[in-house]
Image 1 (tube, rainbow, N blue to C red):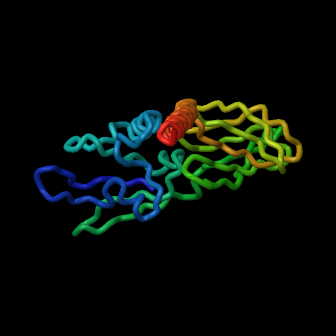
Image 2: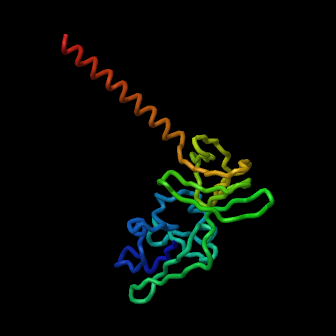
Image 3: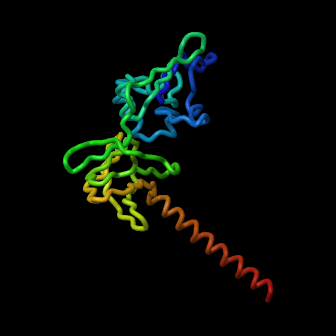
Length: 215
């Protein structure tokens, strides 16, 4: 969904529909939010699609998506929420379903495929038999990995990405399978390693201290 602000000011009671992060509280997926929680590629994509800055002039840390609904479909937007009279909300619903996950066959045919989000740092796309490339319309940042999962076996795939999409190319699996995207940045792995190392050192110090007291 994409929310368009109303009269949002700091010197008076704001007249707006679904302030940032309110959609999250209701379990809704919003194209906007607080800029500190948005990736730079997402902000650039909003600026490009909206033809203007997505931030409210009187409160620059809130990003909205006030562009044309048809253009916002590339972000997966299905519904646009606008402020109406007397505090009511107006809803604009896009024609057709937003394109979120596609599979390209070797003969050039493109088809929609099922996808899902098992957790906040994972995404899964079903790849039909004969696919040679998979596209998922979602923001990207370094740290995302793609794996082809078939039974107990997993093969790492190459990701090509821009501001809006992740693409898996050279996907050569005649029988199809499940493409799993996993967010596992080097910084997280390094932090985990250092944390475990610190816990091991602390355990050693405590054991040595207790042993010394026992003697």
